[in-house]
Image: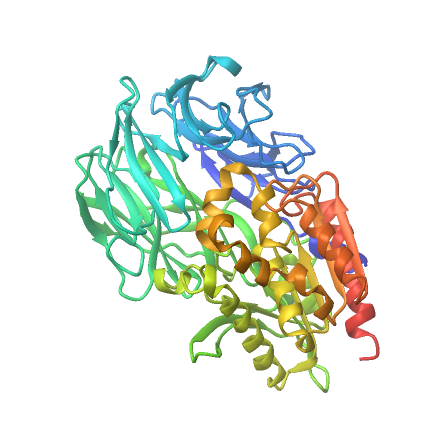
Length: 598
């Protein structure tokens, strides 16, 4: 399995932040978990700045000093704590509430304070705090007491206001402006029904810019004033405008469109509050890009980008010219990038005539009779499989498997209506899309339809289990990673801060319990015919480990089952040594049950 280990050692550099002096900080997983590294010029030898066994989740430079904030949890428990990294390498533990979650809310423009949201007071709700940069622990000032799920979108240019996002569900939110001194909160987005707001940025004139689907099926870029007036800035008739980054001082900005999963970036500057003059487009890998951080004077910005055959790196773009230069050289572990296999965008007709978008990748050599295939289902369900680099997928491709990555109904990226097609009572229609995908693959000349593996994580893990129970004869094996086996026990045991959100998507225990029981794969475990591999993290706060234990026990009465629980992981596998162990076991499992006798 040395070849697999090499693929899982392909590095990623991402999450860039630019310091006042032009130094670029970023996260890179060279040591096995993401840590903070810095560079002061393109292609130079990067300097590692944090040295932990646990993953660092973000880094953000102050606009006034060469110091940065970063976040880290413990063993994947998602109770993120905030830290300050000083130029001399010393680290200050800022929050010191290890039993609470902390959502970073940004530095003040003068660099003297920072904001965050936390559930310190009540696990099920998030309050807003402001803390001096050199204060710790209990010295944070509670500036707003929440009654729901709030996050902070940053300080206004004059540091008077914070913008707050109140999330009712993944499809419904509200935006508020909070006066930091008086505590007065102004609701800026009164609306009926479900409306999304996101990508919130302050403009140079003190107004806000958001991406929203208010009144439309697709997300668009809009200007939102502090007297609650919304004006369209950029609208695309075919695709979502799904993100924006703005430099307060210059009015320069970058916004993104999601074009069939591929990122299209537009760079420009405001000529007035709702008009944009554009600059040449950056030359980035064809795939997915984001995480824009502007440098001093808005002359350049850093972002991360990757593609199907290009691992993730940090690039710096000159705003006016579009000149683009890779600053990081994240290793491909000695693997020739020319051997990485591309994706083809295909569309599969499902049971109701709807076309389901998917990516199909084929190995370099397809054997007579066709290749085995891994159907890799994304989580969410409010998410989207996009053409970014995947080291495990590239390993499977190098080892003779094809990869099929569907965006079943309920996925984001294709408009509000498409993302709601699997809500509550329509849940199993998305599983029918997987059936359609398996039938499409069975008819493909390069695929062996008798060797179709279904694999997925989180909600994708539910999809794996549901596919195995609903359509047992279609699958040669299943790999469930941190998946939901029983919606009732999942909703009863998930973190209290998530339950209301999840019930909006899946159905409520009070109203829909009988239905949720009826579609839970656990109750159909006797129908499973394919060997099953189950992976979970013991510290998972989202899908508790009991989901894995239930399905593994029930399915093992009928088919071969392997279960692998990691005591130092949460919702997924963040540590490279655990990924190597887990996927080595998965590959051995598939070799035994899928490739044997091929």
